[in-house]
Amino acid sequence: MATLAGKVALVTGAGSGIGQGIAKKFAEEGAKVIIDYVGHPEGANQTLEMVRAAGSEGITVQADITDLAQIRQLVDAGYSAYGAIDILVNNAGLEKEAPFTEVKEADYDTVMSVNLKGPFFLTQYFVQKLLSSQKPGRIVNISSVHEDMVFPGFASYCISKGGMRMFMRDLAVELGPMNITVNNIAPGAIETPINKRMMENQGQMAALLKNIPLNRLGNPGDVANVAAFLASEASSYVTGSTYVVDGGLMRSYHEQ
Image (cartoon, rainbow, N blue to C red; front, top):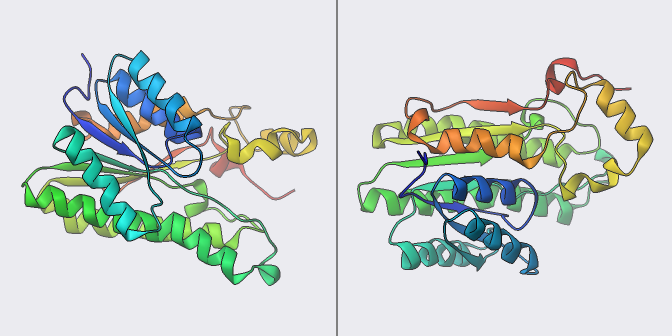
């Protein structure tokens, strides 16, 4: 039986990588999917084809989650298409590499806006809509092992993911009485476009794999499987937790 039959899910940054994998998995489990993207539509259209191939339906919506007006347009588009949104997946994110002493203000602001401000206000509007219709809901944040684990050269990214951890914990307590659950997934090294440069560097890959007990990178499906659980009724008594999907990296990692 499809675990998400009759549900509607909104997935940000769903045009590639983990977001695309989650959208595909949710569709396989019976959910209709709102596919958020920024920039070029090709990836989002590919995700929509995957959703349809899985036997479900969806829509693509171009929306920059750092813009509050576009956040509202994104959620409203889902309500216009399907009358409700039951599940929110805050997946969109980015990182900017630089030594701490060389981080530019503009890069810091971009990372914080996409990784923290966007999820904050998108979640706020999503919850406002749930409360107005007195409906339960599921919020799944795609965080990172770096919500807890250091990552030299990526201070702003780590700060944003640490903020996401506290955001999740706080909302789990505040929204629990409304039957809205909030959880994080913390992926480790996953085969996605954001890691393309690393994957092409044999030396970096060899060093990384030494730190992963399962001796492989993860794939979007590994994350999507956990997201599907957290979005389903099977997780109805689960809130306020981070689920690490990293092949054991956090337990084994050390700087070379």
